[in-house]
Structures are given as structure tokens and as C-alpha cells.
Amino acid sequence: MQTFFFAYLWNMSGMKKLMGDTALYGLSSILARVLNFALTPLLTVVLSKSEYGVNSLLYVSIAFLMVILTYGFETAYFRVSQKKGADEDAVYSTAMWSLLGSTALFLAAMAFVYPQAASLLRMDDRPYLVLWMAWIVAMDVIAAVPFARLRAQNRAKRFVAIKITQIAVNFILCYGFFLILPKAGIWLPDWQVGWVLLANLAASAAMLFMLLPEFFAIQRRFDTGIWKTMLAFGFPLLLAGLPGVANEMADRFFIEYLMPAATAKEAVGTYSAIYKLSIFIILFNQAFRFAAEPFFFKESAQTRQQLADVLRLFTGILCIGMVWVLAALGGIKYFIDPKYWDSLHILYALLLANVFLSMNTQISMWYKLSDQTRMGVYITLTGFVVTVVGNLALIPHLGIEGAAWTTLGSYITMTALSIVLGQYYFPVPYAFGRLALYVGAAAILGHMALYFSLTTLWPSVLAACAMLGLVLYAERKVLFGHKNAR
Image (cartoon, rainbow, N blue to C red; front, side):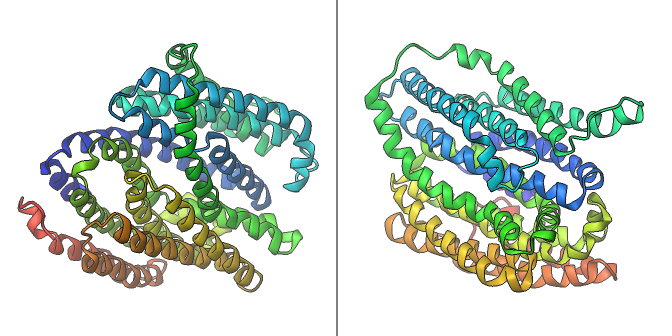
């Protein structure tokens, strides 16, 4: 499915390095997501719906805290260190001392307030889960810039090795705690989600151990000028990131607080289990972002046409992936426990939402390349408003389906606004007609595939083949090796 995309980009001037890195980061992302996804059948079986909901709320909180505590310094490191004449060692050391100090303050604060935080999450009976969550956040935060440095230095193999080791440790321990040790007759306390967090803690510790050379590279220097520059660039990304994470994750909290207390956590668990099936769209977006961001910062003078070409082909692949996932839902559904199957229909809205999210991730490069990160704040705040209003209006009436449609509405709004502002401040010659064709076809054929996938196979297969054929035909010039096909 992705062959024609990479073949074309490989022939584009300056893109060979990007595609090479994308392949390596893609391997890391795919393996990591696959191993994480392989935990889904286990966790949806061994955990009740409500307990799986607790797990989801904790990991949503982790994502939210990660945005706050990294305060945009991962991307700021790329931008500042790649500027002409920049002292990369000084940038790296300044960023690390800043993150180490703020993370230490976070842990100190959590040592006092974790019972209150547990109460906010309705986990008063197990406040220690929130404290364990804080340690996971802390370890991931201080690893963010070292990982960014590996990417900037094109050390993709080391990046991949560490990431895969971290995920593998987590995977092995989860299966050990929930399956292997109990079957061996070894008694374990009934910690449930606690075992998931404990496995994650061990995996994060292994990650930090492997990153020791990067920590030893921190010099005893802190440049306040560099720090202010990074903060000026990164803080708007923090402001943009908060509503961005809210758009992606806050639906779980709205479900928790807007649905009846007796069933709220079960609803969160169900919504999260179905969301897991959108992994096939998410992983490609993540892999591409890891390689694209450092590449486009280095090649910003030549990227406008490349941005347009990449978005067109990227969108085509996303749309193929969406329809194929829905067409194969009759088999894919077995990755989660049957107790969740009655809500499979919400996957359509979630997959289409992730298509728009992935498009917006690529489109949003314009405000990073033009140093107008404040625009990201306006875009994500607008999306956040849609998220809040939509969830408040729809969840009480439609339940988790209302959350799914709200997510789609929010991402469509953000994508449209990003395009409009981008064309004004940083014009990119996007093929709007082709983009609309791909997304519109995916919306129609995806609905057809979903409707028939659980009953009659052949119409779903026909829909999937039609989507693939449409993109292949539209990109036929690319397949024959002609550049700049539109």
C-alpha cells in the first residue's frame, strides 16, 4: 500500500534521507505500536471494562502531563540547534538542565498532592497509582530531548534500538504479571492496573539506562540567552499542545464526568478499546512525524512544493488505510474482547478523525517553519472549543458515540483553519481537489465497508479495492516515475 508513496519520494530531490529515516523510525514506531497493540487482547480480557477505563484515564493523564512538563523544548531543540552558528552542545545542555530542574520540582510536588490528584480521578481507593504515574511521566520527560538529539544527529538505529527495548520490556512484563506467573502457580497481589504501571516503570527505567551516554554528554553550562530563545519558541507550542492533547484525550474525561457514575468507567474502557483499533492510521502518522520534523527544519528553503506533494500522497495512503481497516473489521475485532463488540460502529468516526489529525500534523509544519508557532495556539484552541461544546452537547444524549463524532468535528475544524491560515502566512501549493477526492471517497467507501464488514464480505472487499484503485489511478504518473505529478 505504501510502495508507490516511498518510490516517488525517493526520487524527489533532497528526500532520500527523509525516506530512509522514515523507514527506520517507521520500523521503531510499527514495532512499538504492534507490541503495545498486542497487549490490547490481554488487557481487555484480564481487566474489566471499568478497570480498563481506569487504565485509560491514567495514560491520558500521562500524555497531558508530558506536554506540560516538556514545554515545547523537544521541538525548540530542533529549531535552535539547527540555526546557523548555533552551539549544539550549549543548546542541548541548557535544555536538559531546564527539564531536569522542572521535573524534580514536579516530583516533589506530587509527593505531597498525589492523594488529592487521585481523588480528582475518582481513584481514592488506590492513590498510589497516581504516584507511580508521576514517576513514569518524569522518566519520559527527561528522555524527550535526548531522543530528539538522536534524531537530529541522524542516529536512527540507536533511537530505534532504545525504543524497541523499552516497549519489549513493558510487553514481556505485562504478559508475565497477568498470564505467565499466574499460570505457573505464583501468587501475586490483585493490583490489576497497578501491574500495568509497574511494567511501564521498569520499561522506562531500562530506557533511561540505555540513554546514559546522552546524559553523560550534558555539560556544566546553562546559557540563559539560549534558554530564553528556546522558551520563546517552545512556550507557544506548550499552549498549542495542551488543547491539542485535550482534543485527542479529553473525551475520556468528558465520558467519565458526563455519563452516570455507575457506568462511566465502563464507557471509558469501551471507548478506549475501540480507539485502539485505529492504530493502523496512527502509527504511520507518528513514524512520518519523527523523520519529517528534523528534515524540514534543515531543508526549509526548498520544502514548499515538497510539503504539497507529501501531503497529497500521505493523504492517499491514509484514506486507503482507513477503508481497508473498516473492510477487515470482521477479523480485526478479535484483537479486543467480545464484550466491546457492540460499540464497533464508532470506529468509523474515529478512523476518519485520525485521517484529518494526520493531515493536520503535516499541514501544521508551516507555522513551525515560519516561526509563527502562536498560530498553532489559535488553531488548537479553536479545536478545543469544538471538543468542549461538542462533548457537552452530545455525550449526555449519544454516549461514547457523541464523543467519537465530536472528535471528528474538532479535527476537521483544525485542519480547515490550519489550511486557511497557512495559505495566508506561508502559502503551499496543495492539490486541494485531489485531497478532497481522497477524503470524500474514503468517507463514502469507508461507511460502505463498515456496513457490510460484519455480515457480507464481498461488498467490503469491493470498497477497499475501489479506494486503492482510485489512489493508484490518480497517482499513475507517479507510478511511472514522473516527478511533480499532481
